[in-house]
Length: 551
Image (cartoon, rainbow, N blue to C red):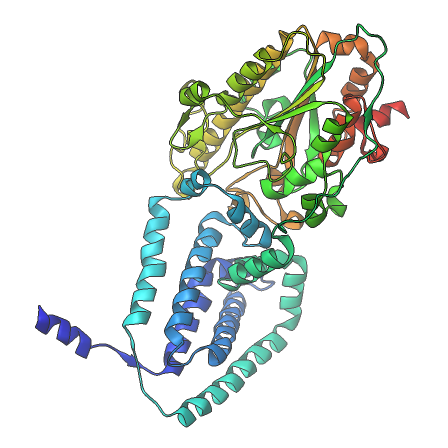
């Protein structure tokens, strides 16, 4: 055995710093960027041989660019450290780009920073393990195994100068030759830079910590200090109880209520008084953006994450006006919007019924809501706003979301390696999550129907949608400017009890009259507060749905 080890040591390949830098640049520029090069091929204005030449030129630019950078970073004592870091970062970012069509952006880094163990575990699969072995571990082992060839400092410096000029000349020359084509492609498709590994992960991480990372120990800015409730019309008027369900990863086009061919809403479709809005767009394409945005009071185009994270929002204003506000969670958190209101701890016996391996079915929300309402004193007259945060259709482990009896469509993709499933299997398993959401929402309405001490209302809206392979994209989180409708077109619906409708028939008729109008998360903040009879200067009537009818 000792002789074998010594033989292996003797047969180690010896390479100069310059050659090892070039080979590393070649691996990163080509093999870790195949998805980017394929995208360039799709966008190229050429065909045939010229298109191949354009893609080859693009690969040469990437190789030369990384080789140029390595001339400054790679020395005998640093080359392996730098190489290992870039191979690991680039290898895993390339997996998500090539396998899931995910563009690495500061928003995706934000999602990663705010995820929990259960969500992270859902991304693990045999496919990513194989990728990690072949595309990450193997190159890293080879890099570490190679022996660095000794050379004089003067000779190394001379080589570096030559390589710097050569790499710069290649980059400048190719960009000059194809300038018009590159300018057109990147001007119209700015976000594809999120496909270039590993710069996508590195640049996005720096951008996240510079612009998006939450600032600690900052005072919360008061917002809506003037908030108050309108006086009741009579002392016999029942208080309001509104349940707002924040959905997760549900897209409008998969709801049969919106015209989808498959019956994904078998229960809600029987609710005669349901008010379903068909044209609603989200504030973002990921929970970390959409949830704070929709509660912030800022329209999407003016939304500022730093302001939202440091300022009170919708729930604070409702609470100041006199509502008892409660958040009941079955997701990875409320992204800061519920920090100053009651966060209901789901009883242990309910968790035992619905939860396993760190995850709970959304039925836990129905039981938790029922338990919460049951413990409200009979003589309690305080109005209430209760928010339920679903697990919904969160991927890629869609098969984990519904109970077995709601897995209506077969065959389904019963794995989190969704890229390996057929189109039919993937759509079926996603649609099954919508069928289960339909049941959960219907159960909320049925519970509210039984409440006699309140005027009850129900509002459901998803935080964002989901891609299931359309145009090679999976999951969500695409930059909004290029996000497909599957990620931004979300379902939204309301329901009101007879007591609520009898007290405010004009409101309900107004809502029914705008179900086909273009609406968005921008409408949530002012419209919900108005439905709750809350007044404040923070309410922008331009986004208040009810104002459209009052005008």
